[in-house]
Image 1 (cartoon, rainbow, N blue to C red):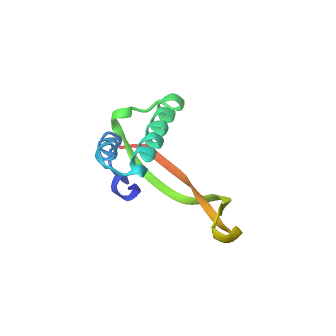
Image 2 (spheres, one colour; image 1 turned 90 degrees about the horizontal axis):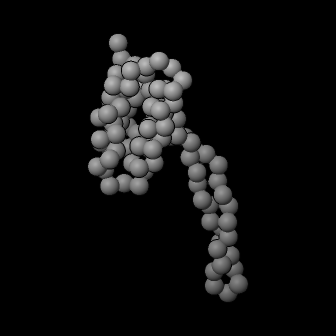
Length: 92
């Protein structure tokens, strides 16, 4: 999903993420809206001219849990996490 919105205007990227039926799309849209709000609050930028300059999804930590199995055994369950980085910039 990150590849589909990279380089697009913020408004177009949010529209793409809104209509894609994947779980990751809503998470990326929430992160992108947060980046736009952060840029608007901390810098004097025009929100209509923003575009997605860089977006990366990197591997994060891992929660390690155990699931009970047959005959008293246990299996390790690794719940993987990820780090999402969104950089927006103003065109022109």
